[in-house]
Image 1 (tube, rainbow, N blue to C red):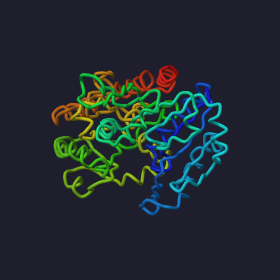
Image 2: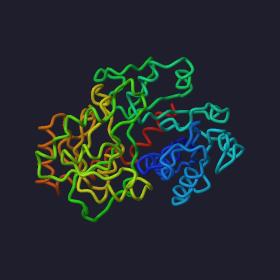
Image 3: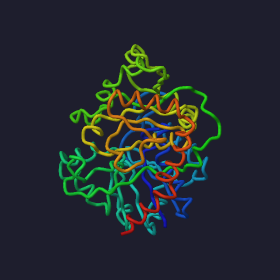
Length: 373
């Protein structure tokens, strides 16, 4: 199958976001499919060197090239700037590729335009990595925004409970199929023991997107902010947020950007961690979305057990060994204690869960099968 994948590598040039697109590209290629990457959001890129959005896309363009050429995809991409300028492959090259392509995958809004060349691809799917926010935006949107989603043959989401009786998120007449982020597990596996004797995570405290939803991570995190004072475990956050406040409550903190400037820095941070402790966005929790983090999947693939807040994902994934959930402070403390005292057992189970539930060789065939209907 010939596949065009739209992602947001340049728009958000950080390790975690990059791996999301990469593992689709690499996983699909490993299954024998031909892949090409395009980015067509109509937005400016974020330039970490300037710590600002930039009208000049050189940082993002260079970042895509450096990343994809590592995997033999250095001539298999095109970035369309907000002003319509093409970088990498030309529009004519994209048109030629789309002319006999079989499937268009729009990951996380990697393309917000229905160009003629995209429309002529027989099957088109959207993958929603930010459930609840997407559905609430559709419910409140003007007709042109809603029409954008009607042009897809199928809609997929990382929110496993969206459209079921377990979640109250409005679907506005759309059908959302459950999927997980695929992980190329062999790229994350390591035999080295963790360097850090710390539970870690990578997180953003609060974003300005969808502020009317009031669904950011800060609201949930405050419920657990005193956790370090009640445990002997070391808890470290790679965080874009209020370092002084967090440190005052006993959290170890480092700048999230410092470990996210490349896919390799991000992977090293996860592989060098003892385990993950993660809190979810308020919107994911309050609406029982069933969202499960692509970052957490990477911890599991690295053989690092995880203790993460339950958004309703426990209805779909094995819980208790390797993967532990919590909803209260007491459950979080019990989980930390359990992982500390039975670490080897949980580390082994973590790898098995990644392989059985998230490996690209399992996730992607099911996605392709549904997309082909």
